Length: 190
Image (cartoon, rainbow, N blue to C red):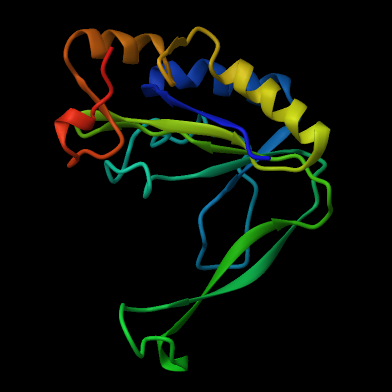
């Protein structure tokens, strides 16, 4: 069963929780996207990455995803075949692209998915999410611990958690949404 929550947060909202996780818990971070190389290196600090809390695409479906795992987790890489283009006839050998995905070498495993979302240009704040990506009781406890630290000081409003700065932006009329080019009637509102 996958559990998760969505939130709106600026970089300043998310950094205290990330720093606490990095300093107090024995974890590493990985890029959760499909990668061009099988040389996957753990990220020791997300708070040092300047783009965390900044939405690159203004679309929560396309924004960066990270995986948070206990340091002792054994990880491996698997090949994933992708195809260029769209439509009929694209699944041919000449259209193949090999990508690489990080996977857990052992089960059950503990894992938390994290999509920070954040500010897109100066137009809007894109929602982020944190979810349990593992299996079993240990992973559920790990997820709850990460979620509690990450969202400390956030307000629960309707179905979202709002960081302090995000809440102030909302009160000032700033757009909080999932897609920068989405219809405004779909924006988050109090």
